[in-house]
Image (tube, rainbow, N blue to C red; front, side, top):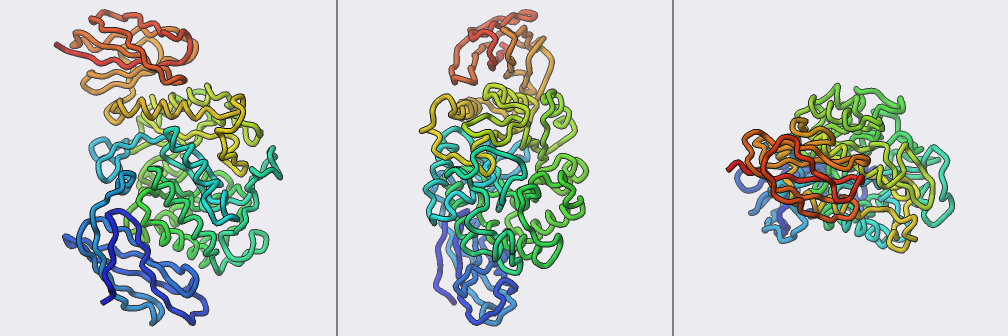
Length: 506
């Protein structure tokens, strides 16, 4: 029996298995069956990590002793046994995996019960920032900025190579096109799909671990079709090997959710059957049952049983109506990964239809008031041009990430998971309400100066408080007796604002 190891609950530990003289190490299968407290069992696939060493990355899900035994396609890796002691989690940023709230199935919650109000941020090329340096200097800089401004869900690619459209910023220090390391052997131009680049994945390990330390979910898109990646043939042995390797290497990270592909069916690269096959293959190999989605509204609509939450991309000017319609059709969380708002920066990379920071923020709130979650894009971080040192930028071109810090802080005090889109009681604006009418949350869009509001007939009085989503300021409006369509005039004129109304029936 090997010497006993120790790990905290929900924390990764790498159990190493040296074995030399194997010609094609990526073709060797390895898994370990873990038996833990209360009869729990987990079968975890291993992966080759270079230096004649295989790894089983394990994150215990319950405190107490776990025992394991390997099964492998090589004699030197087969029937290895050991034990591990799981001790309590002491890190405040680790909450277990993200799950669907069974009491509020349109929303997420962490395994330990911690609420999770999703504010996404697209960082496709996050993997590439320090590939050449072997550090996390640039990576940690932008992650720290993102985390400090309320974002808690990074949408990222395992690998992306280059964009297919014209951009500014080419040749600058902020250009991460043609990354320093390819995900496979060889290069993107002359790939060797029979092997995987260990150095690349060792770096990606550190990136995802750092996201976990900052309480950020890594929304990992396994494939992307429009970023010039020279992928293996669909469904080939090399394709399966890549997918299996990614799942084996990253499933133990509790801050991970799977996304089969960015814009999965948009570019006529594959069909629904292939995406379904990829998703099922992930689930079959992921012992932890991390949440899975597909970045494609059409796929999610036609295959609701294949995803845990619905991902959509829509730039429509009637965004609220579109999202509200989807909300009414679904019984799972709704996540708008891309709503057409791409805040401008020093370089013009991809404009979408909305660049003004105020307009981009308003579209995020339209998603929220339709009962959905959303993602933010900045033109100088969401694709291959990445500026991490945003604090040093001239304020004229600096992104307004602080808007989302105020959003996250505000919804820490608002039980979003208990609110539902509603229409009764308001003549304009957007409305969320608790089922018992004890709380109303109103959104006043740009252009209007007031609400006319009538609460439920059984309400006697109510307190009202304004919130400015651009400054974070809150201002009490007062306590009122119920009357029919009382005018609630915004203290900031015609700028967008929120109004929280807490009602009392006695």
